[in-house]
Image 1 (cartoon, rainbow, N blue to C red):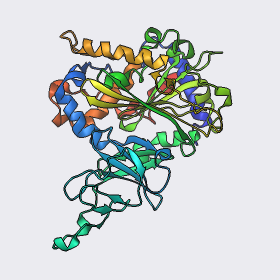
Image 2: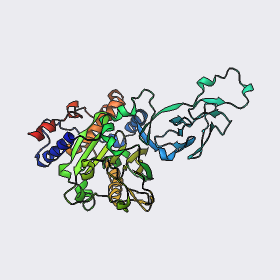
Image 3: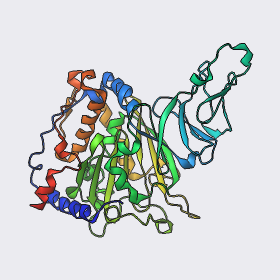
Image 4: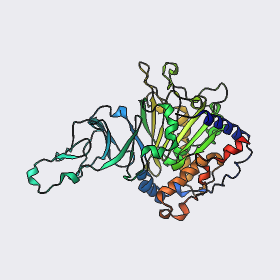
Length: 420
């Protein structure tokens, strides 16, 4: 699937419209300030923990990390101990890493392979699917009903080789959650990309400070004058707002410019042959609510993930997934020397985050007045409030729902303005 000829033509018209406009689009709402407390108030941080991380689809793992039946990995990025298992039936399962007997962990190694999941404490044995199979000394129990002692499972679904989890039993399917983006992504062959690199760094700022640096191009001329700026025409950037808080930016490369990030030995690496014109000639980047940001191109799928360690500390994960690179060195889009440090572009983004955090914690920080170019951040915050429930949020921390459905894909008043 991917983008149709019509969608590509419409995007190109929108790029020229964006470059020519002298003010925000007619009818686009004035965006009220984002309250300062959404970055620094412990009450809002607790609301995020209670609602956003428990009710969203979260990207957790790649099939290469649990390649064989019986392979498992421990995953704790969302603040809960989770074991992700490649079942003996070929399906992938996620369970709380918590034995139903006395609450001990089922596994303590970060990864491995087991025919059965056996608790180290008292030897209760579970299947990969989480069912209780046996207990030690069964003669010491009376009326122990195995059927209600399975491991507590978590919703777990795949998009190609990518594994997502959701702590909400009543959530929609992953494909429904992604909505129209799932079709747009078909050209990137998520089912064929291997895991090339996965590294983690700790940043000294609120997770949204770090993430938002990657969801707008307004900062590019200031923060990235010699790296991203020459590779991206920020005045022709087109933002798209999708249902459920997702977003996309498409910014063309100036004629003759290379991508901002060149992969080492790029000419030796295979391409995803089905990738279309827009991803080959533009920066085409997606934000998936709540914490995924990724440019997508013909050589790699390199998502950035932002996880809160505390209100002012972030676990920053940088991934590279790519078609099979054979004998060439595995591509790594984001780091130098195999994870020793972030590359120049991400250092420019993240090193400023610590300063922003300090500044936001000062008495001089009152709120965030966003421009039209930064509206994906406002769209994200509106979705956050819908998930948390406005009735749960102190009034001074709420955002007003000013961006209506008329601005959310497939609706877009700018298309008519661009045609005109």
